[in-house]
Length: 299
Ligand code: CAO
Image (cartoon, rainbow, N blue to C red; front, side):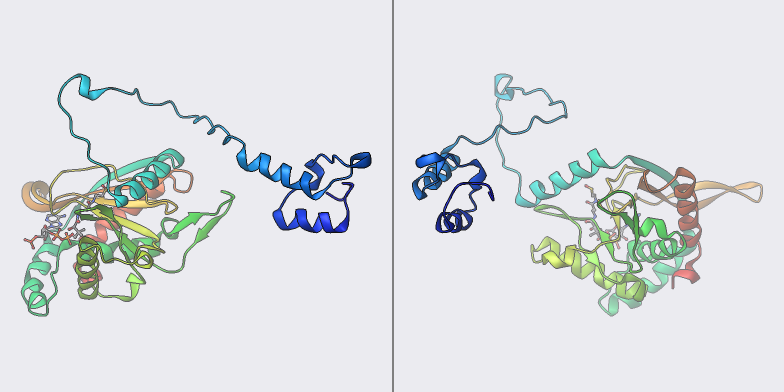
């Protein structure tokens, strides 16, 4: 730009258009650049065909003409499905996922929950196991701070967050949404239960604000109300871990020389292996299971 042969007024004109004078060919005497030269340059760029899209390094799945094999119906994905789909794929591709499974004995927790459920319901609170699980996760995150961290953009530093904002996956008619309970460590189980109910209701009604889905530090995906014994949740990147919860069921547990029926809750923790080692993940889940067995710590 500095070396181009052009008058100050042409330089000003080029600057206003963001045109690089160093690339403009001057048609005047000794290659002097005129206003028309600048205009021609800008016009050429604006009318040039778009650059070819970069070739994806990922192999493509085969394209199939499904209608060739039978009748089909085309249904567009919802806006939320498109957004969450792209984010899930980005996490799946970029983060090396490992899932650690464990069982928590929640027999005493369930007895306490059932005892408290009636009174809670009179106060308009639906006390589900998830409220206790959120509380237990906070205790585990406080004990294992790496699980409440993110890698920075350079990928060379860990950002350890001193706040505990717990996201939870909510199944809505429009697709998966993840409301965030901000500063969940400052809430008791009743307040957490109230937040779970109000946030999921808002999500289902499509009334959740964008800010109510931001700032999460750890996510829980609970499919316990539906069923299943284990699954592999995808980390809500840039978080580094997510807890999957399946349905609790009565299982025979060998205790004191005999089998006794205990209520067992299956847990599945997916973690980013760049940040968390397998041994640390196993310790986290063992700690979580222990806390879930200790109802006093949660209340
Ligand atoms: N084991 C056994 N029963 C369970 C349970 C568990 N782990 N978790 C919940 N339940 C029971 C509850 O106690 C409740 O029973 P009652 O109606 O008899 O009291 C019932 O299941 C339904 O619970 P709920 O779903 O209304 O409430 P919740 O607090 O457990 O969950 C929410 C709230 C929003 C997380 C849930 O409704 C939801 O949307 N889950 C789906 C999450 C999802 O889609 N995850 C996948 C993400 S990746 O695609």
